[in-house]
Length: 208
Image (cartoon, rainbow, N blue to C red; front, side, top):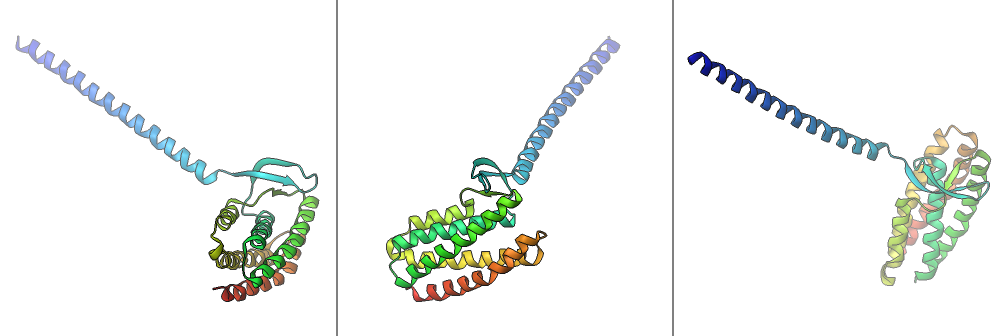
């Protein structure tokens, strides 16, 4: 009788142990799956390409595709679009005469550099964005909703920031871009951008 009782206890213990082990294995599997899913999400966030509308500079065809938003031609094209669009808004909303004059200068100069970049991109089969990148779109949207009394200061402040970024972008391309034509374009355009930055700072200081 004692032997039978002992045997039963051993079997129960084994079953209980197996149950705990199975439960732990199931839980470990669930945790691993969750970790894998999280890793996949993070990888997708980190490595995911930026999809945006792009224009073939040769054919004018617009399509949605992944763009290298950090590349010099893409950033330069988006910067030009920001300048033209934000300055067009300034022509409509600005009150200060100096601000309006600056805005017209930006429209003229950045339309010219935009045309040059599109021509180069066409020769090199580089796809350019059909609309400003998200960072520039947010700024344009913010300016479009700015109160009239605050617009001049907001626009000129945005111009100082944008031209600092542009000067940095073009300085880097002028020194390190491996494409001789793009490098030469950056070197040729850089002095005008530095002049724009100086103009933007002086005009901003005139606005109350």
